[in-house]
Length: 409
Image (cartoon, rainbow, N blue to C red):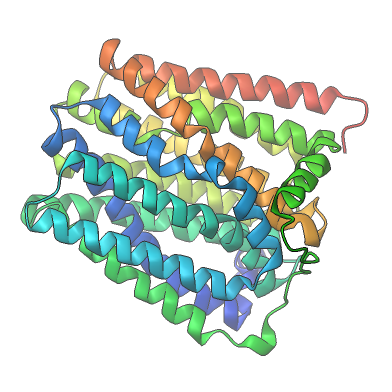
C-alpha cells in the first residue's frame, strides 16, 4: 500500500472507527434500498407517475430538519451522543419494519407513506447532527476530515449496491421486502455502537446544561454562525443546492420512467451509476489533508455543469454518465461543507452548528422538492434538472463573492 493510499484510509487505524464503519455500511445499504423502494412505491404503485406526490413525501421526510431545529442542536450539544444514536437508529429501524409489513400485506396507502416519511424524518433530524459530530469522538480532530470523507465513501458505496438490490427485490418479491430488509439492517449499526471501546472514545466538549434554555441554545448557535462570514457563505450555498439541487429521487425516477421508459431494474441501475460518482468524490476528499474553500466553488460549478448535461442527455447511457459527474460534484461540495464547518467551529458549539447545517441542507427540501416535482410534471423532467443546474451555478457565484471578500478566512 502506498503512503498516499495509506493516508487516504488513515482513520481505519482506529478500532472504534473500523467497527462503526462496518455497521454503518450495512445499514446504509438498507437505507438506499428503502429510498429507492419508497420512490418506486409512490410513483408506480400508489399514483399514476405523479412526481408531485414524490415531492410531497420528500418534503415530509426532510421538513423535520427545520421544524425540530431548536431541539436537535440542543440535544446534540448537551447529551450523550452514543446513547442518542442507539435511540434514533432503533426508532428508524422500527418505522421501516412497520412500513414494510403494511406494504407486504397490501394495506399500504399513500397517506401512510406520508405519515411514515414524516416520522422517519423526525427521528433522522435528531440522528443527523449527532452522527456527524460523533465521528470526532471516534478519531479526534486531526483525522476528522478523513473520517468524514470515508463515512461518505461508505454511504455512497452502499448507494451503488442498495438501489440495484432494491430493483431486483422489487421485481422479484415486491416493494415491501425492501423496507423489511432496511429495518433489519439497523441491527448492524446498533451492534457496532454496543461494541465500541468506551475507553478509546474522545468525548466532545459538552455545552453547559441550562434547564429550559433550548431556545437560548438555538439563538446562541445562530449568533455564532451570523458572526462568521465563512459559515454564513457556506450555509447560503447549502441552502441553494440543498433546496433545488439535491432532489435526486425526483430527477432520476422521472427521467428513468417518463423520458427513457425504464423499469425498476433500470431505475435502480441509474441510481447505482450515480453512486459511482459519489464514491469517487468522497475518495477525492479523503485524499485531502485539509479542506479548502476553493473546493466548494469547484463542487458547485461542477454540479451545475453535470445537471445541465443530464438535462440535455439524448440517451440513457449518456444520462448515466452525467449522473456520475453530478455524484462527484455533490460529494465534493457536501463533504467540504461538513469538514470546513466542524473544524472552524468550537467543540462545544459543533452540535448546534451542524444541526443548522443539516437543517439548511435538508430543510429546504419541503420547499424545493414540491417545486421541482411540479416542474417535472408540468414542463418535463429535463426542465426540473435545469432548476438543479441553476442552483449549482448560483452557489458558485456565492463562493466567488466569499473568496473575494477582504475578511475571508
